[in-house]
Image 1 (cartoon, rainbow, N blue to C red):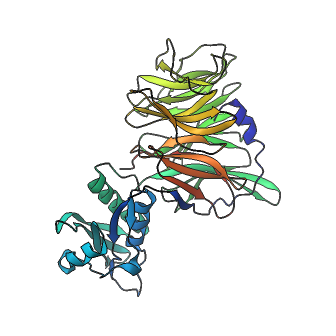
Image 2: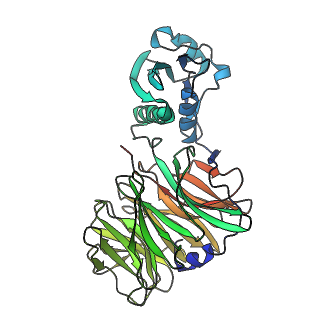
Image 3: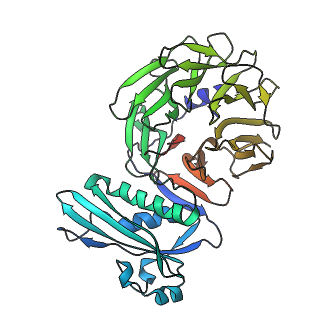
Length: 431
């Protein structure tokens, strides 16, 4: 919920946070009968006594996190091959693995390496895929994510999303002072980096389609304003600072426009800002509160939250403006929509019976179902491959992030060792 009520509630957050700690991912529910796969520890060929990264361990953790794979424990592996020619397939069939990943990390120069791997089908005793990836030391974890993506796609038919990032907002309390931080981390919670920090609230991070910029709301000047941050060069531009509310930025699929909520006409309405010339087009004009816009993937229409029927529900309107069509009818509250990359599913905050959970609407069948069972879930965001939805929730009285598969069968928690995180946004593919 990024509505006006949540804008006020965020001002009251007082729990301590650790801004730079990595997010720990815990799988709380997986898929029964997950695919058995063995990721054999990679051979290390380099100057140091130990490899700088555990490539096999990162790959295994990635696949395990999806809930669709059951990686073998290294201690239970019957052999430790590093190439297909070393594999005893009968031994692995007896062990129960359907697929086998073997590989080698080789140092090729100062801080330069080669990650080589093969994905093998144990039943047919053949190689399904294999690559050699040159990489510098600082990008070894990313290389492991790339390998994970290749394996995931080869075994499921769907593109992997391990080599992506997540933006989120955290808050620290030091010496009695609050500090908000907009952070970006790898999809597995590692390598967190602070993009911007302030003593005033930060909200609603939104990724540009190319993954190079973040739009967000900042209260650093004691009022809501929308900024765009360049993640490569660090440039920062204020793009909306109108009288009243400036909130909920959402990038158009072509990256040239922002949909946002402004109250410059009195009531909050949806506007579209052209970033090339700063021109504004008013998309909705209603006495109700219209907020939380999200673009359909074709860029032709915008889905938003409105209480024009008396309670917050989702509506769709042409991007140039026009008649809005109501989309949701289940429950007393539906808002904060995120749209799947194919445009077929809408995930949202669904309020019913005093609880707020993540709901999913199939646009074709009109089938609606809830995916989570908490009491205060919010800020859903689809993974770029549509397989998972990250969202904010609470655990033990503090804010954490969580993720659920689009079928509701896999659940995860992304928790800081000590503190809170909110407002997650999953990046697009980064290639």
